[in-house]
Length: 64
Image 1: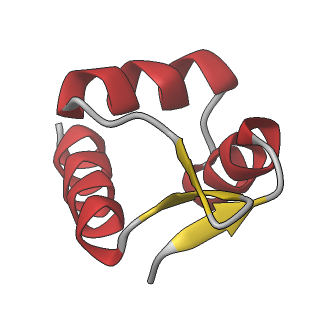
Image 2 (image 1 turned 180 degrees about the horizontal axis):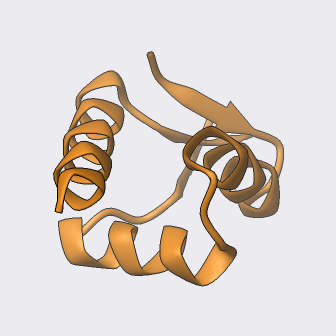
């Protein structure tokens, strides 16, 4: 599932809600994976593959 928004803030807020983490945690995870929120066709987004990696990272961290 890809994620998109009209601003970077929209995307970050969706990720905060989805993972139940703070904004700084979202940015740290994006940075760790080497991802940036790029604007394509007037939307900031992350691809399906990037979201899958974020999901895997979240599960790995949650499992300890």
